[in-house]
Length: 436
Image 1 (cartoon, rainbow, N blue to C red):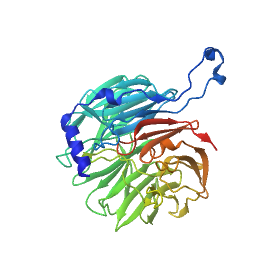
Image 2: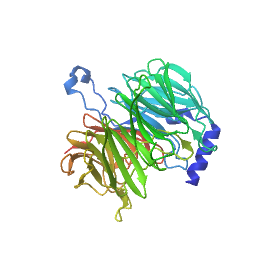
Image 3: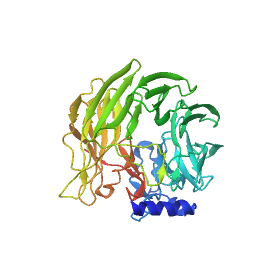
Image 4: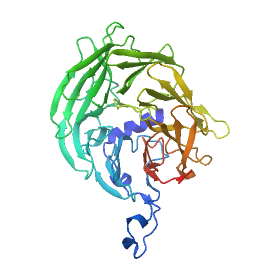
């Protein structure tokens, strides 16, 4: 921790960056096209092969190198919004499609997803994160720039950044005890909402058609969950939540799922329009942030869970595996209507699971593998039983890259983007696995 902290202090103080070192095109293993291939027709063209982009600084002491704030996937590119800039790579080849350096010293935040091909990122100096820019995901062109409020809370030795959320064409910026909404189209401000007197904003999250705020008023009888209309700022719903301990988070805005750690137990509360639907307690589960870096506070935290419909998918806390020296976890499924635990996963390897997405069929996940010993696998956990079915095998060389990463799946290919140099050696990996 001390090494990470000191490294980040040096990085933040320096401000600048060796841009060319993190902007190299990917290394592709695509076959060389032969004369006449272009006339063979689309159906006979060689399939896209594996490629990867090295992450500069991997293996070093500075774990903040290449720290990503968001990763976006389009029909043609995969995009990494990281501290040094926003970089796009062509899905077919790994060649760099475009790169956008930050207008300031560095990027310090980004919207978690795109809306109609548009995103936004925050930028600033080594001391403050005080600007927001819109970006066209097709070209990398910055479409607008505005100044935003600066976060004031937290440790003075660290960098305070805004938590950025997005929904329905709006960017929601969380700074201190205020939520501010800007139009993604042009950066225009729509509304600002400050917490009531003697109340604080503990957390916020956004989903389709709503922003959800966790409002701490210092009393279990007054603390509440507020549902806010993303385009007007009007409060559309308010529910009492009770005790708000130090460890708490809004896991999902739609459906609304609140997590609190009370007396060493994890308490999950599910709200619907009529009020509280269920509240249940679990033993220790892994809800540590996957994208946290020492002395960078305020980032919208990414955790190891998934929500779909009436299902909440969690993982057990990772345990050591003696024979490999790695770690393994287990998937858990809960019914949000009743709070009942439905199953614990079975048939998985002794490695770490990273969730890709949940749907009506169950949970698509990546078994990250273990370096030099266990190759990664793409698996599906059955919605009814939790039993793992192998979808595809990945090469051993990519083991570990997806353990703390944003992971996408597109047409059978797996794309991994580790959150920082602490968690992987490649900034982006595009992997075409062997189908099972």
